[in-house]
Every structure is written in C-alpha cells, then in structure tokens.
Image 1: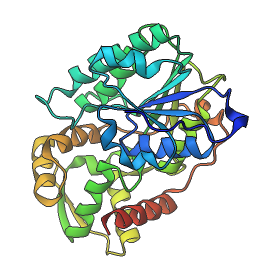
Image 2: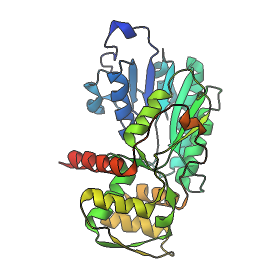
Image 3: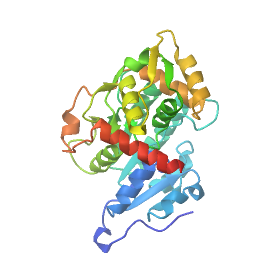
Image 4: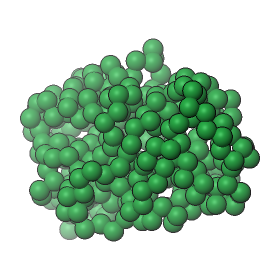
Length: 316
C-alpha cells in the first residue's frame, strides 16, 4: 500500500529522497511532518502502512517494511539516498529479548542499505555509558548499522521532553498522582534534557554532506539537572506543589518498575529497562559535534511546559 508522493513542488523534483524507518513512532512522526513541511521527498516505512493513518495527511509516501524481515527492505530502500533509523524493539512484543531483536533489525537494515547504495544513515540513540540493557542495546544498534560501511551519523540524546514520550508520560503520572513518593538513588543522577522539537531540528540538519557524516554527535538542552530536579520542574509546569521525595537507596530497578506499573499506565516490561538506565549520567561530555549545527536549544522550563501542554492536548 503506497500513498501519494511527498513531492509538493517542482522545485524539489530532483531533491534527494529520504526514508524514515520507525515513522509510526513519536519521534518518527514528528520528523516526517517536519521534512514534508520543508518539501523534502520523504518515504515512511511501517510494518503495517494501513495503521499509519496519522501520516497520510502529511503527503509523505507510505511503504511496507519490517527491519526483522530482510526481504521487505530492498523495495523500501529503492531510490533512497538517506535513511533515518528510529526503530526500537522494546515494547514491540515477543519474548522480551529486545536486545537481540535490535541487533538483528539493525544488521538487516545495514545490509539492505549497503545493497541499495545509501549515502548516509542517521540514527538517534541515547547518551550515557551505563551497563543497562536499554543503553547497551542503543549502542550496539549504532555499531550494527555501521557494520557494512554505510556512513552513520549517530545522534545521542539525553531525556527527550515531549508529550508523546513514554518516559515523559511516566514522570507526568507520578507527579500528577502522588503528593509524596519513595524514590530510589537514581533521582540524584544528573541529566541534560532536550526539547523534542530541538531533537527534530538536529535530525533534519544532519541530513546531507557535512562534517557530521560518519561521526557521533552528542545533543542536549542548555540545562543540567537531576532526575529529581526534573520532576520538580514538571510539578511546577503541571501546576502542582513539588512532591515530597523520600529517597531509599535499596529500591531496586525491578521494584521501581513494579511501583511505576502500579501508579502509572506504563507497561512494567517497558518501565524496567528505562528505570535501569536512570542510574547512568546522561550529560554531554563532548559539545563539539552539536556546535557544528548552530542550533540554539530550548531551556528546560520552556521545554517542560511545552511538553505538558502537548501531552494534555493528546489526552483531551
């Protein structure tokens, strides 16, 4: 099933065509809309294009493809110059081994991209060098994508502040529902959150020739805080008092995820790997890559307020 082309003007008839793998996700959908608004010929790949109804109005081309089914990737990548890889198997279903699914999907995509002669793959992963399954899988995915020699621009972000993010929604429900909470040691871990619209700006800017091709780029907002501090800023954005946080260092990731599962609608199977990664600092250590783009990032207070407004609009 294929929808209309994303070409909206004769001026861009010869422009390089891009593909977004993971276009039905939160970041992927926002990226597709931004690219199509800029008249970039964009193809959105989905396992079930019929479920991608939210993208039909953008004018992007919809194509069927599954990174775990190598045979579907050749047709999806035909005529493509640059591909965005925004796929993550966590929460996808199956036996819960999202690390293996991530490795296999990325390897399939890398082989297909090489066969199709792609000039560039742009991948969004996470900051931090922790040992959690979630962070480890993100890094291994980047390595697998680069395994066939196609240049990979690896953007690494900390917490993304956006209303459609599951990690954002988890914190929102905690703050909304609990005036006080028992919190583990990870609430003191430093992080450098970034507004979702800034993430999209970096993804768009990373397309095409430049010093960023084939290298790792750390991206973040201007403010360094802790996860506990971020929760306090969210409380203010929601219009609630800052919650009383009683820190208990023996609260394990498993117990934390079960507790989150009781208080929020987030699935425990998704919450646990996310929580395991919270013990790792996600702060920029090398700003040189980010500085190449000249993008002024949004402060945390403004980014949090925008994310809250977006999420509450989605719920209404």
